[in-house]
Image 1 (cartoon, rainbow over the protein chains, first blue to last red):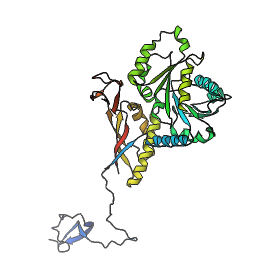
Image 2: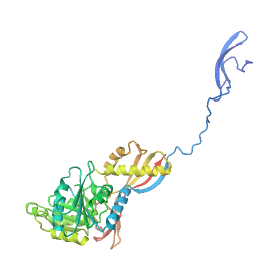
Image 3: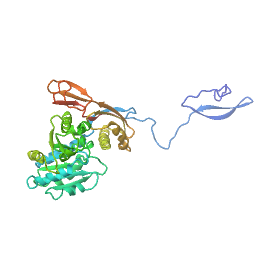
Image 4: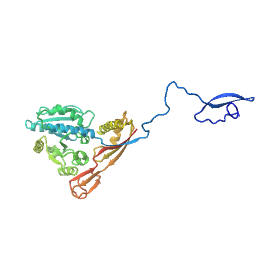
Length: 274
Length: 113
């Protein structure tokens, strides 16, 4: 046994984790051997630190109950829009349809018919261009265009941003012409009083079953371009039946904005809103 | 595809909750997706990484529970789930039914660090 360090002429010490060693040489009789042995240092650090952390958070995930509608923020804004409009006596109508179903032409003819009778305003949404706004101008109503760029629908914040600009004193009826799309706009409340879905008779009578969310969400369905019926195989009864399946008490109005046929029912319905 | 808008809105709203909860990261998001919510699951799952990139929700796992449409009849009281989006009582044919479930698109919970 080595008197210097307690070894048995070899490196047989088991070092605990806390110890560390340097190699050194010393002599046992005539044999010089080399081994390591533990010793302690006083650790002087140039800075103070603690080796213990107080962990106030856990590294394990914790579950937070949320119960939040993903559309909640939009819905809140829509409710604010509705309150803003209601305070001014304005009824808002949100028009939704596929592109090319005839929303803009219907609005052009509607503005002409209501001119000097019911004060109207229009917010119209498209991904690009102000073509629709220009078509509807000069018909006695203020018109603003929202270009949504990449977005496929209007949301409540976009409408809020234009409300005070488009709704002048005395306006009774605000039309919101949504981006042409039968899917996305259906999910976004804008603060409207009434939602209208347009379906042109060139589109096929089973569309309500293919796009049930839009038709379920709208209390009024306007079937447009009925002047084309003689040229089509469109089955009006089948279309009405498809609408009724998705929305049994929906109001259904058939019209042709081009010829004016059926426009009275639409205009009467609008007049009763205000 | 409005699912990107929805995913972005969800991430922003969850970030607010995360801050209130004193967390730093969202690792899992549990959702209920109704058949009549108007939201496409695949499109939403595709859009989510784009919406979550660079936010505390980046890399979070989406756990989506699909909720079928369920109707309750106002006349006979029959209540059942249905595959078809048809708002007519399948038992008695009455056309006044209430949607009991299937329109929701909600975050029920999330796991945070």
